[in-house]
Image (cartoon, rainbow, N blue to C red; front, side, top):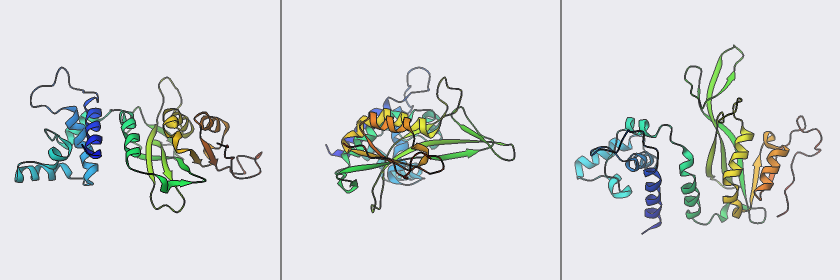
Length: 253
């Protein structure tokens, strides 16, 4: 069994364990959660937004599709059915497999800097914004005209290196109101959750965490130290008046 076959097999197991919204046992002719999850993955794998339609045409013309040969799927659901069944599934279900895939990708020595350490950049970003559409996982903000803007955001973590043309994305941590919390989430809280979840997994990389002025605070520094990491955090003079220089320390290994 090749490495890609092993990883796809593990992906199929994860997809099979995703929550099934259908009531009762699956009936003959219905799609399995494994097929639904692998169908969604296959679109990204092939880099085509119309992958499923293409696969149906290929299957009709040649009797068998790449979905069956590459991913071991038994049936191909429609785009709408994929959205219906996967909406609400936790992305965290794939975190363990994601990290194993990163490790299996091969040597990451090209990312090593600072005497063999690796740099992990932390930063927040948004991927949805609307004044009309919102859900319980939305963050919100008031605009100058008095309107409310709703948006989805997440903390991105990526392996980076000066002079390197590519980055290696790591699992993201979504920023949303937490259970039992009255206030909405923030990048700092998401960073602390990310470190608690993944810090021990990446400690073997001897990570140096990079962050902008928002992360240059004692709670983040303590969270990084707690998982065996080092850090370089930007400090603006206006918000860190007691620190004379614009760089935080690198803790000795």
